Amino acid sequence: MDCAPLLQHLLTTAATAPARETTAEFWDRHCEAARRFPHPVDAAAAAGFGAGSVGLAFGSGYQVALRVLDPGLGEGIAAMCVTEAGGGHPRAITTSIRPADDGGWVLSGTKTFVTFGPEASELLVAVSAGASPEGRNLLRVARVRVDQPGVTVTARPPLPMVPELPHGEVELDEVHIADLLDGDGYSRYIKPFRTIEDIHVTAALLGWLLRVGRQSGWPREIQQQLVATVVTLRAMSDSDPASPAVHIALAGALDSFARLVEQLEPLWADADRGVAAMWQRDKALLGIAGRARSARLDTAWAAIIAARSQ
Image 1 (cartoon, rainbow, N blue to C red):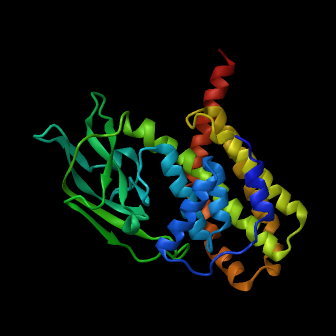
Image 2: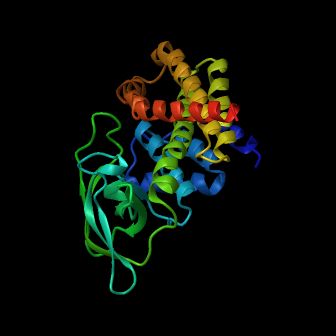
Image 3: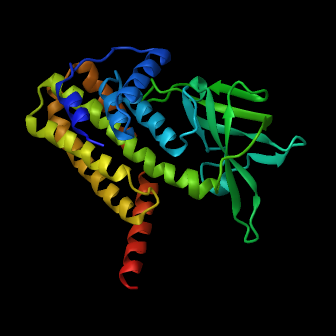
C-alpha cells in the first residue's frame, strides 16, 4: 500500500488542531482519519497529526493498535484490561473464568488501571484459565461489552502527565460471555500488543510532533526526520510482531526517535508556549515500559545469536 498519500497529508494539510476536545469529538476525528487511511500506521500518524494534545495523539495510536491486535472489535472506543492489584505480569492476573451452564463463560475479577476505561464500549480482558502442569498461569482473552450486566467501570483521577487520557478501574462480577478469543492469551495477545502498541503510538506522536514543527517553523531537516521515521515504522508494522528481527529493528527506530526528541529541545522555544509546556509535562510518557523494551531487545538478540550458530 502506497504511503505517498499519508506523506502528502502530513506535509501539506493545514497544521491546525483543536485546543480542547470532548471524548466524542476525539473519537469522531480519529475515526475520520482511520476511514481515510486504511493502513494502520497511516491512520495512527494522521490521527496524531490532528490531535490537540500529546495524550490524545497517544490515544489514537493505542486505539489503532488494539484493532491490529483484534480486528473483531466494534466501532466504539476499546480498552485493554490486563493490570490488576499485583501488577501486569502474567502471574499477577487473577481475574478468572469458569464454564457457564449455557456453554459460554463467566468472568469475575478486577482490573485496576485501564486506559480509556471510562469511555470504552468494549474491553479486551486478560483472564486466568487455571494453571499448567508446570504451574504457569494459563491466560485467555475475552471480548466484553461494557454495557453487559456485571461490568462496572469507575473513573480514576487524571494522571500528572497526559491528563486528557482517561483511565479507570473495571470490576467484573459474574459477567457472562459467549466465547473467548482464539489462542493463548499471553503469546497471542498480551505479549505482541507491546510491540504493536509501540509502533502505532510512536507513529501517532510523530504525526503530532510534525504538526507542531510545521506550526513552529522548525527546520526542514527535522521535519524530514519525523516523516522518515513514520515510514520506517510503517515498513516493520506489516511484519510478525513476535519476530526477534522486528524487535531489533523497532529498537533501532525507537532509539532514532529518542535522539530526535533530544534534538528538538532547543526548538520548543519557537513553539506555542502552551504546547511547549504540554510537551515538557508529557514527554515522560516516552520512558514508560523502558525496562520491558530492554528485556524484549535482550531476548531478541539472544534468539538471533542462537540462530546464527545453527
